[in-house]
Structure formats: C-alpha cells, structure tokens
Image 1 (cartoon, rainbow, N blue to C red):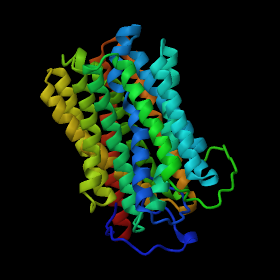
Image 2 (tube, rainbow, N blue to C red; image 1 turned 45 degrees about the vertical axis):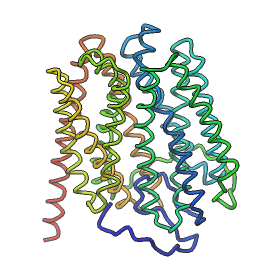
Image 3 (spheres, helix red, strand yellow; image 1 turned 90 degrees about the vertical axis):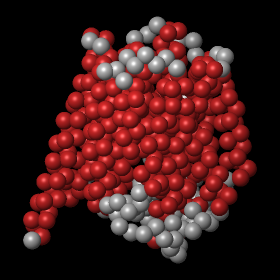
Length: 427
C-alpha cells in the first residue's frame, strides 16, 4: 500500500533486508536472497494447496449436520476450533521457521494437514470433526507463518511487495477454491464427506514430495532454538492506528466467520437454495472479490483503502441482510460481491497501516497482537449459533451484522476525526 511504485530493486545485503510494507506481515525480519523462479512458483503452489484444504469443510457442514443431527451452534464451534488452532500456531510458532528452516516447518505443516484430512475421512462422531478442524487450523497457522517468508526470499527480482501480494492473493484464492471444489463434490460425487478428503490427501502427499525434491532451504544456518513464549505487544505510539485497525479486523473476521460457517445453512434454510455447489460458489465469490483489490488496485493509500473498504463492507452487509429478509438470492449475491471487495480493501489497508507505524523491532509483536484480536471473532460466531437456538438463524445473523455495522461506523468516524486532528496539529 502507500504511494510507492512496485519497481524491482537491487537486492540489499542479507543483514539489511527487512519486512517493510508487506501485506502479509508474517514475513520475518531477515531474508536470505535466493533468486530461484522455480522455487518461487513451487512454494506458491505448496501454500495454495495447504490453504485450500482449510475451506473444504464449509459446504459439508449441512451434510454432517443432517447425519449427526447437531444444532447450528455446533457448526460455529467447529469453526471456532479451526480459529483456535490457527491462533495457537501464529502466536506460539509463528517464527519457528526462522530457527528451524522453512522446509522442515513446511513439511511439518503438511504432515499436520494430512492428519487433519485423515480424521475427516474416518470421522464417525462430532469430536473427531472438532479435532480435524483444530489440526487444520494449526496447519494453516504454520503455513501462514512460513510460506510468505519463503516467497519473499525466493522472489526472483527482489520485489518484496510483489511477493507479499502474491502470498495474500494465493491465500485468498485458495480459500475460495477449496469451498467451490468441496461444493462440487458434495453435490455430484458419491460419499461427498469422504471422497473429497481422500482426493485431497493424495494431493497433499504429492505436495510433500514436491517440497522434498524441488524446494531448497533458504535459511542457511538455522539455530534450531525453540521459543514458545507468546510475542504480543502494542507500542504506545502506534495505538491510535492499531486499535481502529484491530477492531476493524475483528468485525471483518466475524463477518467472514459467519459466512464461512453458516453460508450453506443460510442459503438452504432462508433463501431456499439447497444446491451445495452454489453454497461453495458463494464462499468462492466472497474470497475472490476480496482478492480483486489486491491484484488490481496498487496505488491506493492505506487511509483510502480503509475508508472505501469499510464503506463497501457496510453496503454489502445491508444488501446481504436485505436479501435474507425478502428473501432474494440476487440481492444476497450482489451484497456478497460488494462486501467481499470491501473486506479485501479494508484488510489490506489495516495491515499496511500497522506496518507503516510499527517500529521494525516491534513489528512482529504488533502483528501477532493484531491477529490475536481478530481471532476473538470466533466467539462472536459461536454466539450467533447460541442465539440461533433461542430465536432464529436470521435474527442471530441480524444481531451480529448490526453490532458489526455500529462498530464499523464508529471506526469510520474515528479515522476521519484522527485525520482532521492530525491536519489541525500541522497547521
């Protein structure tokens, strides 16, 4: 983000390379340049494959619900189990690849993903599904803390911003593709809750081979020191930017969680669209729309990205809830597209703003705190499930969207007030 141009630049010495202006801020502070295009592309494929599996369960929740006869709140708890696993990996193991190397951690993440997938194949009860979702989140967190750093190190021209954009676009695109693929299996394939995971398990096995055979190790001398102490913190001078950004991320994550956990149920029970391919496609549309600003809009400042993004999210939420109230699938679809674009813009703007104001030696701690606050959204999603048991799913979703709308409006006012205060202080 910001006003800089994305022109390739000469690689600086190893000890001077830092993770400034990365959209995916899990990139660490030291990079060892290896200009290997093949490794760059292989790692992007490994990252996409690993993240694709995290949304495979999304269209299948309604099938598991029919089979095991559990209430909507269990779906939200399954989603929370994934978030908990990812948070633990990011907070406790986010920089483990700095100390043990990228390849071992990538292989470990893929191994955890294989274990998660195997649990889904063999699942006979809800507790197994919970364990599978937790392990899936753990694998996703390990990948999110390792793959972007490797992409920055393998970027052929040394353009770190381009590597950051590729990492984030790969993440969002694979999340959407996973839901779509699972929806197709759920609608047209036999044994839909098992076959898709069996196929994915075979793909993971081939991905492991790719890492072993084709991917070099970019960290030349890992010290193999394991530190599990959480690294969270917010520098006082950054709080004016950090808290609006973190609370925006909390709202955005809650909306994504509601959509990711309950979109198939909303489509089936309220909009009367039982086709699971459509359910997976809607999640794919949301993530695809979120990725579009990242690929198309490079010149926006962080302030404009946040303001325009939050505004579009508010418009999208109004259309989504209106589509559920009527009900009207077309209105719901348009709201999903507009809201997705807003989610992408706001997320990019918030992360970039935190990167810009955080001191380099505190950036990793600040980003970890940012993700930790965003992950609290899983509690809100579980609350929707609990409320749906007492009222209705529509009423519960309306409460969450109303609370998110109110908080986002306050954040908009705070951003505008802070900018006016800053301008007044300079004049």
